Image 1: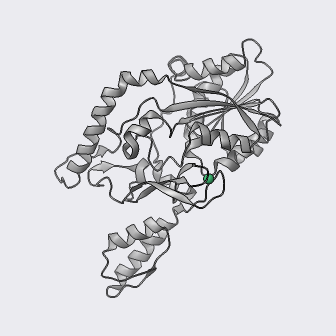
Image 2 (image 1 turned 180 degrees about the vertical axis):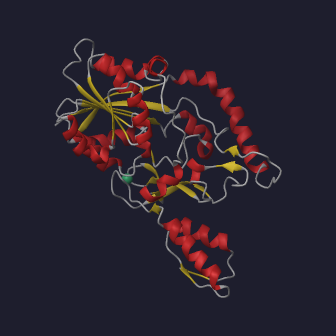
Image 3 (image 1 turned 135 degrees about the horizontal axis):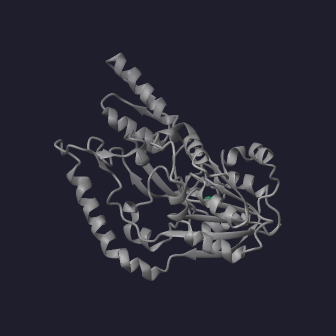
Length: 360
Ligand SMILES: [Zn+2]
């Protein structure tokens, strides 16, 4: 692809991002501008990869949503999870063969750090408060169905992306051999200092070393809450967990549902679409992925559709506000404080939890 200088800078960057081909630059005039261009383009291109479908390997897809650079004006909006505050475009596609929805081009491990800025983690946590005011009641109810008290002692469970280790702590107290893995070292050290006993630093990628350290050779129950939609290669990463499971062992996965009512209503404005989210599963695509890994779906849980009525009005108002504000603040130079881009992006109860069981 060849661009001439008559094309404005931002248009060149936009085109290169949209096509994800590295363009050949033909720039006449200021050599410093040329160097800056090349640097900028290399920098941006190294942050993302073009993907084939993770589920079926097809390279054919249909574009579902395309958000050009500066979709949110960077003078007025804080957008680190949208585009790493870097004024990049975002494209969400659907595999033409198996219907898996994913980000393409997709941020890679170089790019991801811009999407997760260092947050302030307290040195010490309120152990009692975290154990009593947690978000896992729903999940504990599901786990109780499959592992009724008191027959939990023989089961080893691992919670991936555990943050402070609240879930493994709760399950340890119910008798499980429970462990939590967290990538963020600060979360792990704060949790250990504050009394959480079952948390370890690591990710799916170093599960091999961690299992040696913890003397685990079988994971009866693997839990991934709000994790799978952030993975760079779900098929390969889940395969690594599957190696530690035998027939009858389970995984419980919670993620947002691209086939939900919220997505169908709000489409490109849906709260869950942003660059931190690399994969957008439905019950069908997630079931297909697990079937390939040798699992069968035992149960799918979702919030009753009728409950959506309780928040529908509020979310509809947010949707309208969002549409107005994004346009209104496109050129407004008088705004004193940046707005969070997603404040008014709407969603309903668009989360589902799937329980899968290993067949062989
Ligand atoms: Zn596919």
